[in-house]
Figure 1 (cartoon, helix red, strand yellow):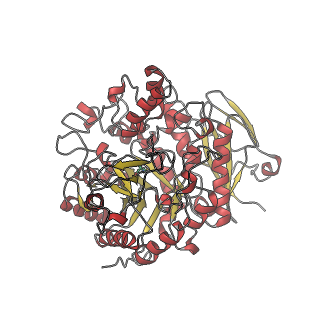
Figure 2 (cartoon, helix red, strand yellow; figure 1 turned 30 degrees about the horizontal axis):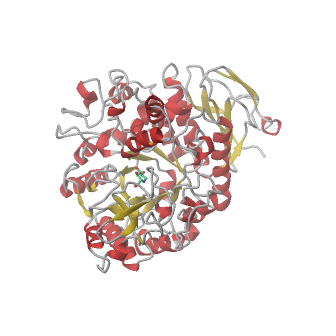
Figure 3 (cartoon, protein in one colour; figure 1 turned 90 degrees about the horizontal axis):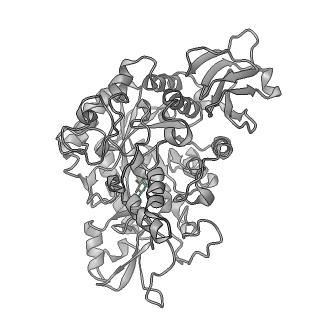
Length: 572
Ligand code: NOJ
């Protein structure tokens, strides 16, 4: 049965999404890893933030080599997360609270444990062979081309049995599906329909812009960094056609909200993916703002982040998507990124101010904000003591590869500790009880030792907390139209400490000014904006992160990590 609810087609434009990494959210069994019931138990907490969409990451049957992004059965729940009844109950409990469920769809690849792959591997003429991408070895017997896996090493794996290589852009147990094959596309439509019929309201589509590969599979000559082959399969030749088909067959008839995760994409493509006229997705995730600390685009090398580049990337995407009619998914954090709090600000002395600054800065932008579990309570990256503490397949691979490339074990461990995705995968800290209230057993990954004072209970009880700061911002987005429709104008003109911008519509102007440094900063609004600032002090401070309530004025002094949002009438 199709979802016939009467909602505006773009109702999600004033929503905020809460991202749940179930393995680290809440364990109800004592097994040490989170489950679906744990999420259901915590829905009131999420609702309390004002959230109306919950994105649940993969809970399908999976060998868990990439924590569920390696799906072995798209139609069933992995027992580690619970049962289909648990899932159905979650859907019901969300509905009761007027909330929506967005689930994760991983169809660029499947697990090699999936029956399709087992069939495909069994012989070259098996009917499922063409569900995946197989190639003969190169003349020297090596891989068919020089494409690299995102998790390190060649993107090709050799199969002794059938003497061919299969493509695997991630872990070697994640085989890329062959979207050129119409049957594969039909399988995807079928599984999306199955979940839409279960009552989910949306999909987050994993690395969906990688599904169309250059059919020639050329070698990468390295002329465009990082030279690992991505230019031949990113935003590939038939990607828009494939997505339009999903939209027509499933997204539109079921009125779904959809977000495409776009790896190494471009603004031009994201406009096409997310402009409603194109009938593809509701919105897109792009990652350029989270690469401003990658020297030459290399994730596994370190440099301090480039503040100007960060502001420029955010601004380019604000302006570009606005002009092209696209829609951004706004985020600082997810399960693949170290915590922004530790990366871009000060997570110790100024943790409270920094967390609020990041929130205000992001939630003033145009798009649909995403809050990743723990962000709303100011969870920082943990302190890593030993490489054995890491669980993530990418981190473990890279620790070895970095040493093969000449780093000492200490250097490799340091890089991994800064970059590891495990930084954001530590269990949610609920209270000051044992194991932070996450589990009664032994957690699958360590708990941050700061849980006695960084936890959800403390945050919910304190009206001035980071949690309540997020709650206010989420509420503003629902109530203040300029947050949704206001034109974005950057105001800081290359200031070394300050990021400042305005959002302007015909009646209201919103101003956000944030000091991203631990020194006091002076900020002079540009001349042509100064005249818009009312002299009678009528600009209203909507939210700030210090005890004083600074008035909006042409020249401002901001304390370390000070960050404020004002609302005023638009003057013409
Ligand atoms: C992106 C997901 O967010 C990440 O966690 C996963 O490892 C890759 N896609 C592969 O599915």
